Length: 89
Image 1 (tube, rainbow, N blue to C red):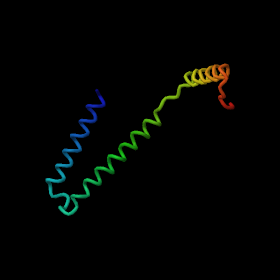
Image 2: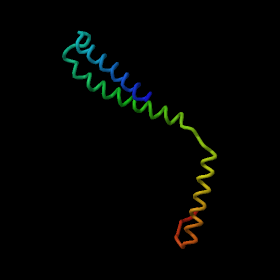
Image 3: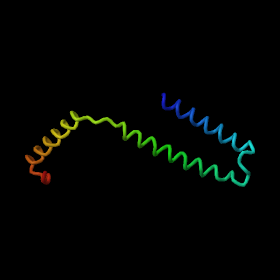
Image 4: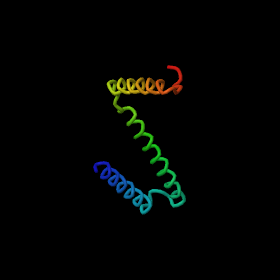
């Protein structure tokens, strides 16, 4: 629920800025079409930033990695008993 509220508040802030820039005479009328492009580029940069932060904070689980390797070895042994070719290690 926190992410939804954060996203909605971000959307409200961006909308307020958008409307404010269009209503005020800060940006010339001939350049207002660029706001759409800036918004899309900014949204893409924000998305890439969130993916990068998520990758940097991704936890490593050495115990789970060992359990996964054991499960893979068990599955290979099971398939070898059935006569299937599981490839080389």
